[in-house]
Length: 123
Image (cartoon, rainbow, N blue to C red; front, side):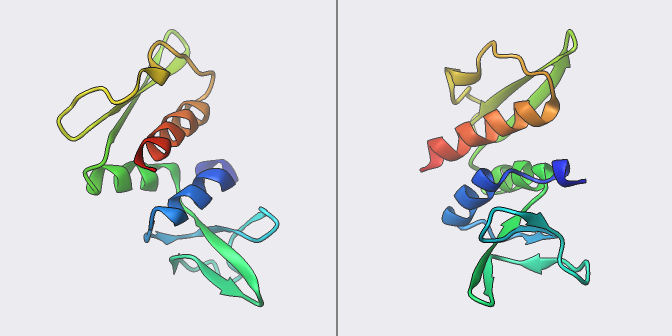
């Protein structure tokens, strides 16, 4: 189930950019992924017992967040048993050539590369 959530690096970058969605998953100060004991959804990033907790959204939550904030649209597809991704701005223009023609073995690898490119562009 952990693979449905973004990486620690992406979670940290999102925190810096003000990501404020409710999340089921979290990372602790040691970069360990966990679900809250009561399996409830929590908002934002917080501190518990002097440990910084970082919200870990689902991949789809980040895609939706980027789209809702009118930042980017993430488009991915399976082609010849490999995944391809593109990042478009609100006008539909291709944002980065970094991903052009690159193919990934898994959907998660494709989404990670694309979302990292989006977050790097926002910074």
